[in-house]
Amino acid sequence: MATDVAKELAALQRMSVAALREKYAEVFGETTTTGNRTWLVRRIAWRIQALAEGDLSERARQRAAELARDADLRIVAPRQKPVPVAAGPTRTVTREVAPAGDTRLPPPGSVITRKYKGTVVQVKVLSDGFEYAGERYASLSAVAKAVTGSHCNGFLFFRLNKAGAA
Image 1 (spheres, rainbow, N blue to C red):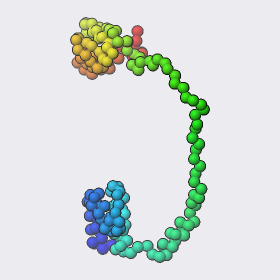
Image 2 (cartoon, rainbow, N blue to C red; image 1 turned 30 degrees about the vertical axis):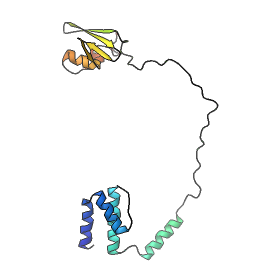
Image 3 (spheres, rainbow, N blue to C red; image 1 turned 135 degrees about the vertical axis):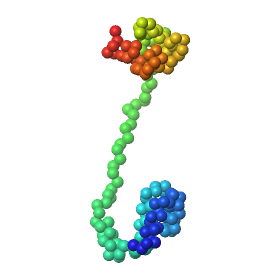
């Protein structure tokens, strides 16, 4: 391989995708819209080497064509799966939807009480969070952190998990 071909191949690795597209148009004589850098580098490198050292021999081309003719090609397209048809008119059923809240929590308006280090901690359950000491919190864990000063699971701290529920 000539040194100028080796330099060109090394330069491909440093090119941007836009520069590779320009180089592709230069060596192939047609443009490309692909942004796949690896594919561009490989195709351009192959073309540069083929132009410098010669393409496939006529014997190799004939053998490739022979192999392609002998390949098992699909002649009939695969059958499409049947589309299920609705078995009649659709009906709409109306029913009340259960709230999507956590089942471990008491309903809004309830007060969760827990003794902690000699004081009684009372948290009011709101529809969109919790209230403790006049401040609103988004989660029980945030309340537990405000009480203890360190992060801990709010359900475990207030003993609302299934294992610790009384």
